[in-house]
Length: 303
Image (cartoon, rainbow, N blue to C red; front, side, top):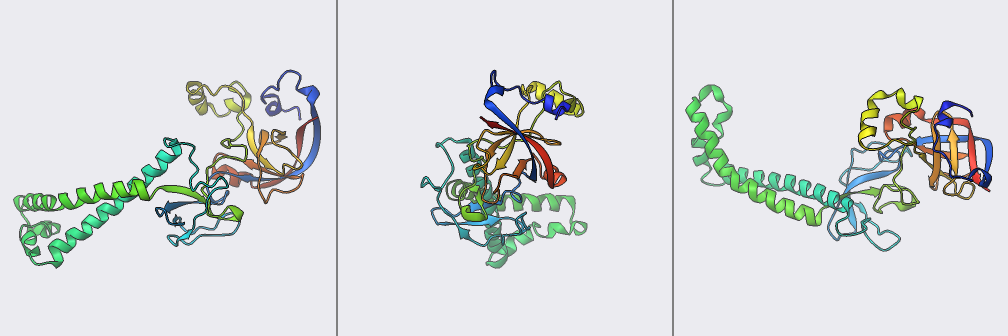
């Protein structure tokens, strides 16, 4: 394991070599990402205080072979700490994002309801002929209208629709932000129905390994260098590996040829045994490209 990729790994702390026990073993690796199809989560609309949510999905089959029927209510469960949400505080960025998505959903529903009321008011109820006579509906037949009649029809239509759409958007946005936050939920395993935070078992965000800025691996993708310079991502970073912590405790470093250095920071019910590792990738395409591989890895255990 004297490849350039291994030499580009983050430098260990002084004296760390004396505290590490190095082993080499065949391991069965499986790629995963944070797309939902790999991790088994799905977007869902929280139904206020009701213990259920509406899945927002396409019904596509996940990596485990399971699938969810869209818009069919599913049970919503609390986290082990008793909370029904994953937020740390009131102004948690994730909370703001979830409620903002709920507000957008509410605005869409409110505008749709306003359009429905507008159609009923001017098409089904008495008096609807007045709007028709002004050209707002006949405007679709442009060949039979003059420019002046068309403009007059549009003005009449906008004047009639404005109250319905504005009130619908305002009411829908308010209700959506308060009662319909859109967040992620676990869709399978024993965690089904619990809010999904996107963090590992150690509380960190998963990430792919990243070589140092001046390594040959980075020079092979020169278009990423400007962004890394601006965001001060100059050093090498270990990737996230899920393993059986009975055999590989949290913090164990592993070098997998073709993947790079990673640190055990996650676990799962399906990751069992000393030879089973799950490797995190930033995109679903990269995860599919890796797939499953059996390979010799270098493992650094604490002595």
